Length: 485
Ligand code: SF4
Image (cartoon, rainbow, N blue to C red; front, side, top):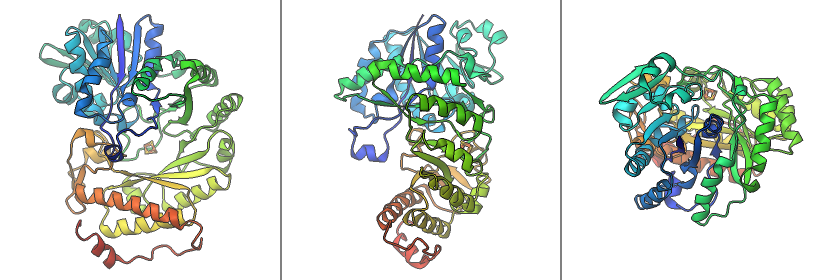
């Protein structure tokens, strides 16, 4: 059976509407490659296209190119894969999934379509009823345990052998309860990376000279925390890790694949620093292979001096979800963090000569103009006084099935905007608050965060490291941005 697996693309970010031919590439995600490798080992003829890399931005005029690319694959089954963990790769892709399915079905009307990713858990039956009307089967949770049975399209067998899937039969949609979970990732074959050859070929056709396509790998899955803007799947707390043997094989595969044109740049585990024994195993694999990644994620409640020391030779930076400097906002977000811990963790990491960065969220609930001003003031100090090396602001996105999404009425939040705008780094807010800022005002606030960060960067080395925080002029601030508030 011929199977085509694709990673759909998202709408470009604000910067990509200004410069639509940015040369650096989107980092490749390995979740679909895991499924490709498994299906190949089960005897399927598998092709893979990371359309997310081929189309960094997508304009109407690109439809001909998309048709030409997909026209080469007369597959019996199309699998659309949007990742089981990253929220950002999901709702924002809905529009492109439908475009892709339409083209594949036009070329081969009898082909079947399977959806894999978080959307099945995020949107439930609405996914097939409203959002993806041409998908035949959507798998809830991780697809690997049931994909072989699903690919038989024998719906009678589904009832007995497949937990957790939605399927379409005539005009009816059926839902089999449960969620699929890969209990042990080490029982899956190590990921093969040559599946990326076709993607590289497509990038070369548009004039990109691929010498080092950036890849982010995963060494563990799941997170023990329950941040209210993030957690939204059943297996979220089910922490699983890949062992040394599998990781070693994957690193070797990665190095040898695609004529040595792949480069491992990032570890995308939700929380790489959870388990010290795991850090030691990964460290030994990386050191044996001379790998130093650009970054990995940690949590301020979890980092220790010992862990930071272990990470010194395998990563250039440690990134935390800071989200806010206001404890009230961290508490309402169930972040299990505080501003004090943010500062302590930053100092701990910097003392080991590793760069420290924080992700920040603009537009979380319970923020008044005064709160934004204090948060901006703290950000200025963190950067200008070199307590942190960088802060990357994102807009708050109400990902479906998160606590904030499910309780939006109680917190006076209205969800607005199109699905494809639900992108954290996109630059546009898609929420408005009854007693707070509107989506347009939050978008302006996001730009102000970027402005303050840029000004703080310029002030590095020119101000006292002991500068007092909290000195603000609320009247002038309201005056400056009064037009928008
Ligand atoms: S710690 Fe990070 S990955 Fe875990 S729930 Fe919170 S935001 Fe999500």
